[in-house]
Amino acid sequence: MIGRPFIPSTITVHLGAPDSDAENVTVNFADYIRNVASSEIYPTWPDTAIRANIYAQISYALNRIYTEWYRSRGYNFDITNSTAFDQSFVKNRDIFENVSRIVDEIFNDYIKRQGNLEPLFAAFCDGREVVCDGLSQWGSVDLANQGYTPYEILTYYYGDDIELVRDAPIQNIAESYPGTPLSVGSSGQEVRTIQAQLNRISKDYPSIPKISVVDGVFGVETQNAVRAFQEIFNLAVDGIIGKATWYKIKYIYVAVANLAELNSEGIRLADIPKQFLEDIRLGDSGNPVRVLQYYLALVAAYNNAIPAPAIDGIFGEGTLAAVNAFQAEYGLEQTGLVNETTWNKLTEVYLGILESNPPDFQTNEPIPYPGTPLRLGSSGDAVRVIQERLSYIAEFFDNVTPVEPTGYFGEQTVNAVNSFLADMDLPQKGFVGPGAWKLIEDTYFNLVDGNKKTEGQNPGYTLS
Image (cartoon, rainbow, N blue to C red):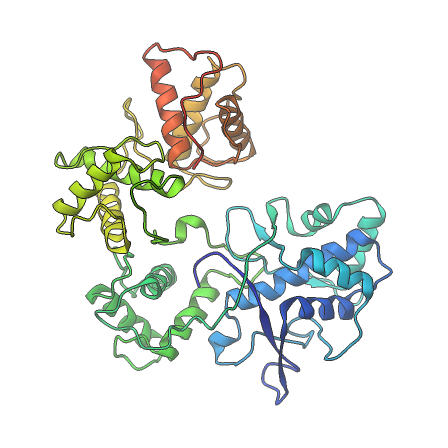
């Protein structure tokens, strides 16, 4: 799947090696973690070591579910209880009281790499009989006794670029196959998912043609990519995504991206096709409105029939006029309501403009938002531009931290962005979305034009 992980309500465990004729049991996810923790570690260990191990066990299990590691191989379970393949689970075993209490607190927290979406494949071993690249269970005890916190234990084994996701939402998770085959004429998020995954697979299998626009519409390009995939992997070559093709795509995608490995290349927000979330209408406010306004403003720069709305996060009459004009210009019903049809068309036009007219990062004019958030781990010309802007702003704003224009979004850039946002009395989220991008651009060009900051002034932006 591509998207944000959820904590599953239940998990199905195979009580043996994957190919063994063993029982499957479906249990509450938190109960599963209680059982694993009680089977894998000792209740007498320091609290911080127990917590670090439980975080690893949660993340390991979630990675198996998120990547559909077993289901994409034709199995009807999520994970095994064989320690040769996964982590220990003993049916009907007693649960340690202190372990149960800790699981209640953290069962919907997990580890991921900064900038990535998927739960970390948090490999671990006992550290005595077996040594591995991941967490050492007995080693975590030694670190806990030295005063390490759970997070410090995890970074010791998994690196400094991890973070803990807290209070992830819980929901029932069905298998990802949509239930009916996808073919020419199909549309929706399932098609977007397949298009994005096929494009990633094509990097390793270049005979699979690229799908030029990941738009959720199953056209001839998608059909050709599916047919090429089916031919390579010995499936019936019909250009239709049935269950066998769906899960083979999933299987190969997880393999080429190493998503079920400790050294996963990761799924980033930028890898997610721009997708519709909910209707946006007159009177709405917030980040979805601001992104809408930013897209409309860029389209308006290339189409005089569309008035550019203010990018203020408030769906007022100016935004309504721009939406109506866009709908009229692109053959949509003029409702002023941004539904999925309007959003998809707007995204298509916006990305088409960026593809045909990429931002000129050498220009001395304001540059349009590059389309995806800049955050820790991002790199490229857009990052370099933001770094240059912030360093220039720092010459006038005493509280803003300058940063070297390296083109890599590291901790120094996080600090520079946060110092700028703090000076503007905005939340310090450490990334640059559409609103923060425009605020930095506006501030930079105001200074270039000779306009100096007024003490305490807040231009009224909110972070996106």
